[in-house]
Image 1 (tube, rainbow, N blue to C red):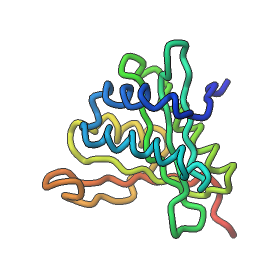
Image 2 (image 1 turned 60 degrees about the vertical axis):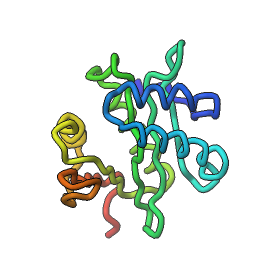
Image 3 (image 1 turned 135 degrees about the horizontal axis):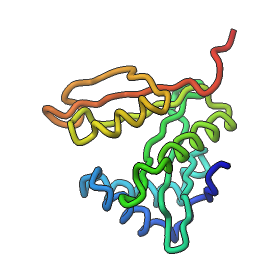
Image 4 (image 1 turned 90 degrees about the vertical axis):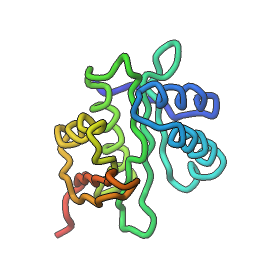
Length: 163
């Protein structure tokens, strides 16, 4: 059975920012950016095809995923944000959120999903997670985020190559 995800609402913003901050994977500047991303999502970007879903759990979201079409591409999508509450990591929730985003992108006509993350040791589990979930390491850009902090780009086909 798939996750019981629901669309993110403006009332979720504080909880989602707190969830992301609590994972220990996002710097304050990044959680500030998440707040702006969610504000922009509700103001305009949902109407432009961006998608944001939360995994509800009584007291608040246990996880969320934010994905959107990549500008100037033919049906390529990005998973921009995926996070699971720290105390719930390692139980398959992230894999279900990721699978949901892939299925949702495919349902919107998507053919390729990309995810970007850091190359630093902190993100070793993140990179292993993407590989375990069927993504290929498509590129590494050294020193992208900062000196010594490169970008790893992962990709996965979600619909077959057109013949």
